[in-house]
Image (cartoon, rainbow, N blue to C red; front, side):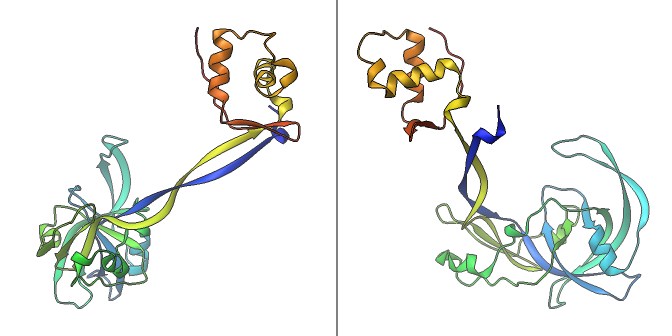
Length: 255
């Protein structure tokens, strides 16, 4: 196919953002006096705690080099080189502190900042009145697993209504879980518009039968195969300025 004869329209599909249990925290290491503010993901589905390489760099520390056997949805017992370190994490007001004795480093955490709940998400759901979310300008640098029970313990919960999210309060503060109600472009579909000169002879014949009165006056009788293909194209192909345009899908069919 000649690329110069193909045009495409990109159509955005809309979906809603899902809030995760992400809370702002302060992190420090006994080997350094630096204190770094970051977001922590409280992940009840993990039995291990991770931090990003970026967070270690911000703290100005290096852990002990080690290897970790990691099991994910994609891989089982995948050996990964990383660093091992101990950290301390607290809420923004320094009221609660939890020691993370075993933290493995990773290049990045597979989390999007769009999943961080915001105060405007609370206002979108009136039954969450009273929930206050703290906001900081920081990346997601920490994943705290279920091996740190104190960090994941629920202090209070506001149950969901209908399709809305629910809110939980931890020692680090409130967070929102579930459908936030924001509309964002999540993926795109592409509709190709092909010019007439790249259609094969069979499709050109079908189109002539449909759109050209001089060749569609009863003299020609379409086969079952022709009728099936023509029906498939109706509503998706049109003639404009002598050029056939539209979107279609090639399918295998039998009579």
